[in-house]
Image (tube, rainbow, N blue to C red; front, side):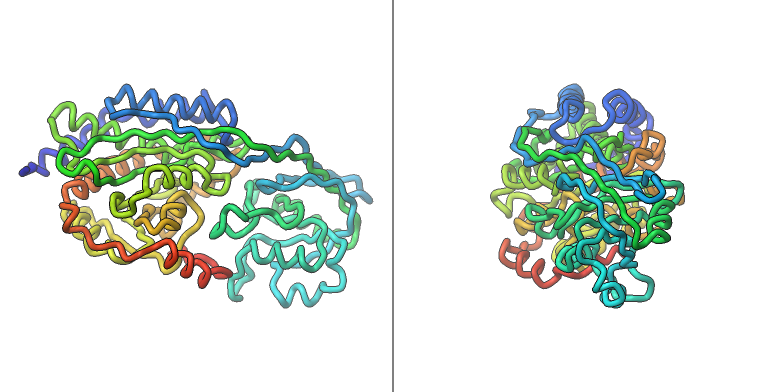
Length: 457
């Protein structure tokens, strides 16, 4: 089938820009529905809205796909400097266990070996105060490794100092997400603001009260799946996905209404191309939004297990996360064998987009569960790697509101993703490079990379 790519590109960008639903989707997800912690009623409302939108836009077979989630919630947190009766800013880590304790404060700096040597005799039985950032000029050590070392040395709780100013704090997770199902906090771990962190350091040796009331339980949640059926190779698939859940108490404008909306809008544009010009994808393109990304990537893991059991059937997964933080620059692969193919398609688009390959396997978003199965998965080259918007440092916090979504840049993401996916869908499956990865080869690589900090540019 000979395709007029000039006509297709004009339609795609016109549809992405002039008929955009970005603003209305953002208002519904962030303001009408609001925070979307996986298993909550609001998260179910978001999934239902997404499925309804897929149906309205003419996608094939939109579904809610339920799965069981080991989840967590909290009802009460408190930190107080007892001697001066001062309440301290506090957020619990994701899956922080309950605790009620009074213990002396010990300042362990960045938690490096030198810092620990200075305080080794004071850590046991104490609350350790640690900077989440890496120590300047030193070899970076993952925060998870530093937390576990403090637990081994006898700290009864750990307070992490957020690096943001203005008393802003992020929800964080403990453990190494290279093994997400075992990423648990070794002791109660909480975050405080930069400003109150400095107060705790000044009061080292004094008593700190910490209270956390939390609950662990099992509940159902759901991914959303739909597709455009391929007209030449329907059994071969590309997947575009992004998570629709948020952390507690965050409406998640950037993280990740932006990625969710880009999935919705790319699906709408390509469905309109099929409906109005009669141009379907060559292979099947699946559009998915995942639950529980903020809970150890559980939704993407469930989706990969359900839809990607035949590795060679899935040619590429593109994961969309935090897209309101910088303009699109290209694609970042985990495995190198698709680089030439992807770059050739980007070159045909002629917008200067580049394809790069990570030096390590990135376990911090929903592409990772696919990688663990040996499936080619990627994410977009945006703020995280270079050229971050100056006002875009919002995620995992209640200040990540609808105004953080950059509508103009998101329109460009949708247009470029639509162009790339359609071009890739018309590459004959026999012309795709063989994927040499296996589950075993990926696990061996992860074992070798454990303990290193993921390079981000």
